[in-house]
Length: 216
Image 1: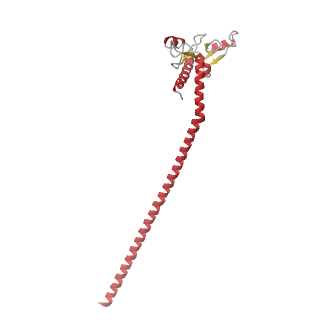
Image 2 (image 1 turned 30 degrees about the vertical axis):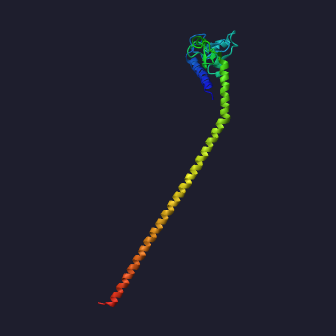
Image 3 (image 1 turned 135 degrees about the vertical axis):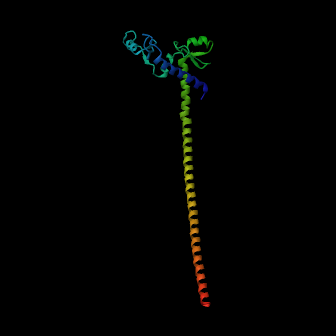
């Protein structure tokens, strides 16, 4: 994904987000100049508060105007953005070399001689470019990523199975050794008892023979 387009798209969307927030909290109604504006008229154009919007819709000269809420789709707001440097000036153009939306004051002060075009055309072009990259991500990168995750998950599962199998084998082998040592120990003890009995028997036999040969 090209960094230049990402920066441009982020710049536009960030500006629109800032504008929406400012429109809801700071931009005054262009008619009463008292209440905060929550709507804008695409026909006039102009910012309107709730009360003035209602009046705008019933006046004969303006009742057919198209009024939108500030929270509407970004593409519809793109021609009604305010400059971040000159908050009372609407953004008019997009500076291609600087990759930045600008108002007429910005063009005169900072972008004089630069190639500029309409903000709507720049937004649509960047949006289409981003959609192309998104489609590529959805069609190739996400499936590839999902496949890799699945493969790694399968590897982890197989590794866990192998580890469990080895652990069971180690436990079984250890248990066999314990049983073997226990059996050897028991046999050794039994052999010792048998030898003790045989020794005592031989001593008794020898004692009996001696008593017969040498009676008191």
